[in-house]
Image 1 (cartoon, rainbow, N blue to C red):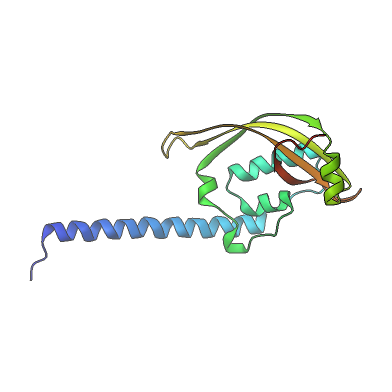
Image 2 (image 1 turned 120 degrees about the vertical axis):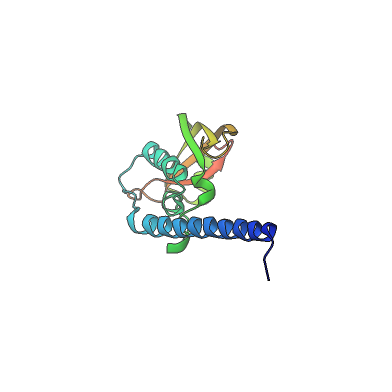
Length: 162
């Protein structure tokens, strides 16, 4: 029995799609394991440096690093990389100190806090689509649990400064 050309083309197309998907999944696992094994954040960073580190990890799709900076539950070894974030190009344009979140700090039991207004752009990498996702401006609240603890990102949004 002879297989029609159209059926062969469909089969080849499906095989290529499956191969690309398999390669992407393999890349994601390799990046996840790499991030899990090679990411640490020094505890002696300033609030400003911690904010910069957050944007660095976000730009690289490093979910393990983002969790470290945010003091979130850490992802497992196979979940430490996000292809979704990796496809984005995150550029921290500028930020400025805007105040102390006194009521936020007191309500949540933090020792100290600082609020920064950050402006950043988020776009897809040129190789993907070239479509811009836009320009963003938002407040980022950095906090310390006690006098000797490191700075961590504890809230994102607006109107935190007193």
